[in-house]
Length: 335
Image (cartoon, rainbow, N blue to C red; front, side):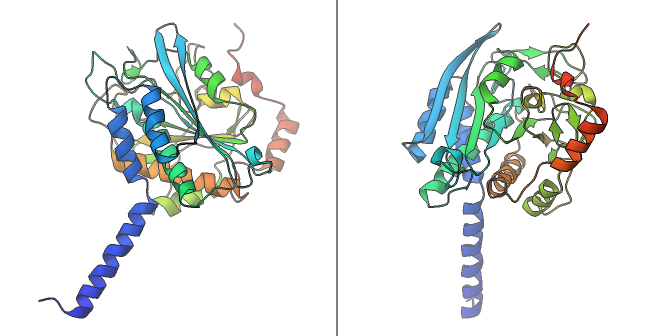
């Protein structure tokens, strides 16, 4: 028989673990994965899931057509207690789930690695809506956006194949990136390379109007807190922050939002120790996606309160004064 003190200690430990689990997004990750891992999934089905959490949520779903098919755009706007939607002045953050597609059917059966960005975005929407139901409102508005496509094409890419997309990246940028966003976190599976050799997630330096700036200390602090580990930062080449379509190599689409905005952008790369093709199935690690999404949630909380800076405004202004604007890197350039 166990002693009374042992029983009490065990009960307290279980209750503490339950509270920790509730603070995480694992429940939302599992629910979202179950919905997205479906050859017939649509944006409307994702909307229906989110409305089971908050029926009056501000959700927009519509079809976006491209040269290789179509996809369903999903936008969720979640007002903050002091956000612009409610007449306040707290800054607005965009949380964008980047991907080519959720699946590569019929060539591949099931949810592909490339879909992790959408998985994180949908889980984040579900979590923040649930938080509001429980009385926890972020101060700033949050715009969450991704697209839902269960049968995207694949395309050749070095060193491993990429997932393609039924629509052009410029089309997605036009739909997701708006002038009311004061900062953007863009999450994308980033496993098809040799420059990030850790499993979990890594962040990029801040990118703003063609400049690759120093990595935000505030973001590094939050990454350490949420992971309990030293932070990982992945390297960027100049060509990685230029638009798709200029016939140069890009690490992937994680930084593509930076080509369509004046706001600072940070990439959240879901990573692996080895190269994994974006079209691979069975390659999603729920714990890694949850950790990345939880980090993004903590950034959204702090950014809305004015407690997280993506870049040093004075230092950026000094760079522009000394070296001029670099926004030509946001264009396709000149031949």
